Image (cartoon, rainbow, N blue to C red; front, side, top):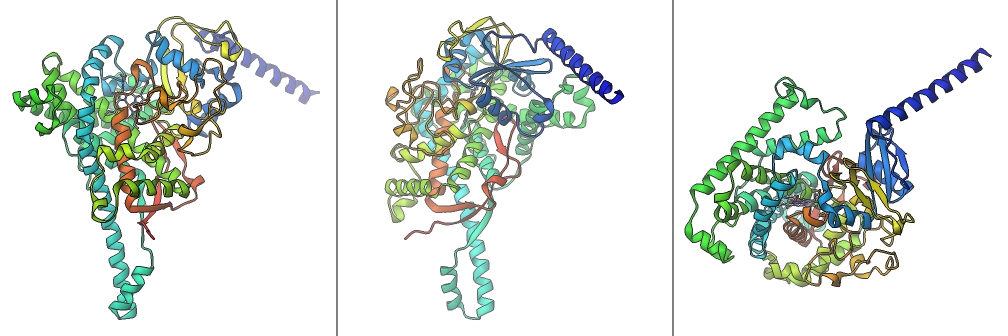
Length: 559
Ligand code: HEM
């Protein structure tokens, strides 16, 4: 009896505790029920077993397209439905701000576009969007190809070294140069490369040159500024995943070593950017201004975004704001692109038929012999539809960031008719949202065979057209768009978000990724060093690998 009564006591205590925590959760806001919306109770311990986004994706598949997640005192509405996403991001965007994301990023990005309040954002968005016009993007093709060429050259020289080494060994062994040369021709030389790191350097070099006309030169060597950029990104990630915001405590920035390092890193970046801004202001030229006004980049030596912002909008912007914008773009445009290239490579390595089809397209467009060694032009890029779709399909499976964060700043009513809830979901002011791009992109109601890597799907998918309130996939909805987007997919594909806070660098990023992939695929074949399941995805601001993406790279074997 004593054991059964202690069991009863334990069950009772558990129940009381459960009730107490439920009441506490209610009081603190975690449990405010939303009519018609399932509730998931989060167990913090399971969170440490896998990245939050993968855990959330599992709940999305289990609980459906809109549910509420109660995590102790915290509560989130989690959305994996394109129609609700369209409402939050576009149709009623003014009722939402960036909430938690702004809190997290403000120490680094200040009032830069991503965390900015609506008033600042409106002004700066108006200044920055015109800087990404078509003539600028065309001028950027030179930066994309120059930087990708550095990576190609680096791989070529690694292979050359390995081939020389092998030739040396064979010569010593065989004692006869001719025999050895024959053997080298037959044996395929491979080198091991950690591709995530290479792509990170490549993307950083591109963003440095494209945005500030500053050469980080990180494909070749490391500089203190790069170290500082990685340091701050690492800290953002730490803050995003750490439960208690201890860095807000007084003196934490002076007493906690990692916070001291963070402040020091910020100073390195800010000093570098201040210096660049000062130089750009000092070198302001009237002729440049005229050329920029006419969008004639052939006459401008420095085509960077900073040049445009200083020349065209210089007067009405303080240095601090300009620096916030630049650091925002530096961070927003670097890891994201690196992640696309990393996961694109990961997927390609497992789908040789996709690689073959892409390489056939690249050969057809770039031509043979000497001609093939030229840098791809904008026209070439336009002619490489399949490579562009490889980039888009990578972004479908690995959107960066994998979820968008919002907070309601007014009451709202989410559409629910298409989900069997005709009254909709009433949302109180102050509700935090995860709009799960990752899960929307893998939602089987909207995508045929969603886990499969199939770049052609954007052109061939037929199903999903009967879903009420969803317009389906239709590349013709914006016939001039080079890439699928949230319009051609009616918000089922939203790697750059949608509505007024949509990414300003989307075309920059897509073109840069396509150029880099095309130039690498044209010359090299690669395979994963380890089985694909051992490449563990982890998330911070983006999805990256836990231990790097190790590949074996070889020169392309042509017939
Ligand atoms: C915003 C994705 C590259 C600059 C965003 C957003 C997404 C995104 C999803 C919207 C965030 C939200 O709604 O909460 C990506 C991806 C990239 C990429 C996947 C690479 C493949 C770039 C590049 C730049 C850039 C290259 C600049 C050169 C920005 C800025 C914003 C933004 C400034 C904030 C826009 C605003 O709030 O008005 N990006 N981005 N991004 N991105 Fe990108």
